[in-house]
Length: 151
Image (tube, rainbow, N blue to C red; front, side, top):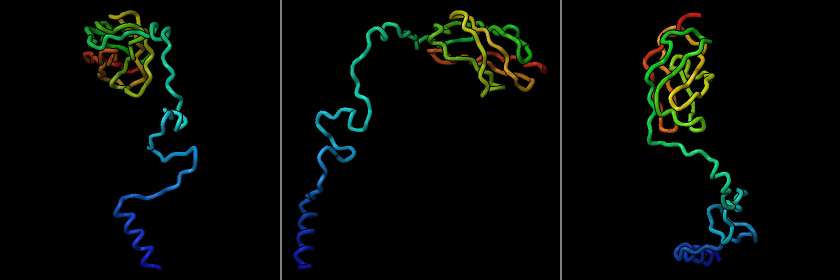
């Protein structure tokens, strides 16, 4: 009897066929099931697009890299407002933000004025030199150093 079972298992492995019962309505992970789409793993199916939403989405020009021409004033204390002048900051919807190298983890309060001007508030940071980085749809730009004065 043992020889027969061993022979059957050996033949099955040799032929590369095994039989696994799968309950109705279930499939193994990664298996292709006709008509299942994304619903197989409880993910909502893609049902088309909303043309009104597509028309209102901004078109950000990623080919125009931003640049910073100057920062006024070039010395400021934490809490004071500075003006960042440059070009290719894009539209308000495409502008991503402002950071200071001396306070890279701080959330910076800024106001998008237009595609060439941003106003920002100097964050609480250690006194010394700091670079200002703006991030827009076309990339990022770094300023010349700004002197953050002690409070």
